[in-house]
Structure formats: structure tokens, C-alpha cells
Image (cartoon, rainbow, N blue to C red; front, side, top):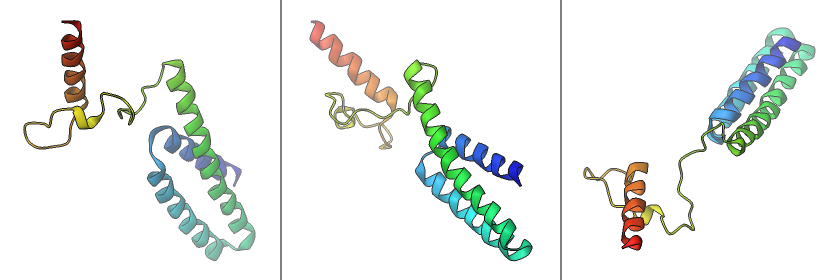
Length: 121
């Protein structure tokens, strides 16, 4: 049973380093269903171990988020591409895409280059 808890911890840490909180909520719901099914099938003592798996997923998620922040701070990982809200280069200043879709990172970079060229003249 300890290997099951370790695998759930590993799944939580991978989820934390790659995905957002919504994915954690989905994963927790699946593990909770797994806990209930194991408790019904194998008894209360094994069900308590599966509850440890639920806790391992959540602790692993926190560890994965911490690992991601350490890697981003060290320059190894790439942070999510979201412009800062209080920046002069917010999404609102970027031109709309030609097809009316959401603004992309390339659009924002194009605006930044244009603005820096305008300032240098």
C-alpha cells in the first residue's frame, strides 16, 4: 500500500508542476472515488490507506508547484505566458488578431517592439 501512496504522491507532484488548480480538483475527485470504492471492496483498514493516497496527491501537488517556482526562478523552467496586469504593455494595448481570435504572445511582442522603436526616434 505504501507504493500506491508513493505513486499518488508522484502523480500529484507532476500535476502541480505542469497543470493548474482545476486539474488538481479533478484528480482529487477521482482519487476520492477510488477511496470510496476501495473502502467498499476491501474494508475500512485498506480504505484508510487509500485516504492517505488522497492526502499524498494534495501534498505532491504542493511540492510540484514549489518545484515549478524554483525551476522558473533559476531560469530552467519557462513560466506561463501571461502579461502582467499593471504593465504598460497589457493585453488591452495589443492589436487584435486578424481573425478576431484572442491576442497572442506574438501580437504583444510586436506592440512592444513598435513602442520601443517609437520611443527611440
